[in-house]
Image 1 (tube, rainbow, N blue to C red):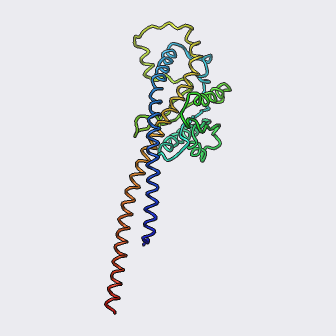
Image 2 (image 1 turned 180 degrees about the vertical axis):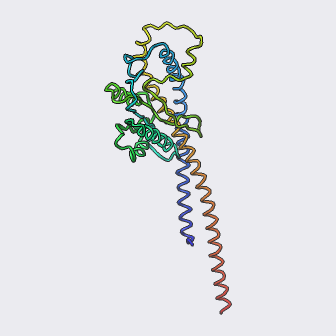
Image 3 (image 1 turned 45 degrees about the horizontal axis):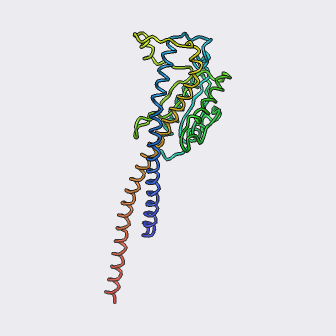
Length: 294
């Protein structure tokens, strides 16, 4: 049975831990507000750009002469997977959920005989995936958005992807990230970036009457300029969603840790009081027994 001093030391240790988790919860809540506003502000622009590109793509025929970002190489042999996680931990299952989805998708591609290349955005995702796929990681980005995520930082990732695409080092590019839905909900999501993926709904809407647009210059010329920008915007949005989800997950995890620490303190205090009472009772019995013996 632990001594009274050991109980006091454990209680003091848990109280110190509770102070740390409580402070981390407050910091995460402060960062979450800014990250959430930034993520929500980017959604209208990225959505309208995607809708516009969808309308343009539905008007043209995709063949071997189409831009690489639009039609790819025509093959699906080499897949580039961009995995976006955080640089820091202590955020529950935030990073492991994306890494789990990435592992499953990579294994499926390898089982189909495909070649896989991985770009990790965030140290945690790289540390998890390198245990099994170290030879497939072609690059890793760390420290992005340490103070505040900017578009120029997302451009570092997109430019690297564009350079790989210019050398035709992959056929299909997919980004995996946690989509921010609410403070308690982050959904692991997979989006195909290259070749440009036109949703089935957009294809169906193409058969319905809609306004007629005249494009100047022509659609192909516009796509050559907008497709690289759309790639950067979609990666930026994924990184913003991931940043907001990270702070939300950390705030939730630290709140649960603070509650658990409080419960542990109550249990340890109860055990300490019981042990102290037993110790006092034992001392009284010894004193009384000694007095009677005299």
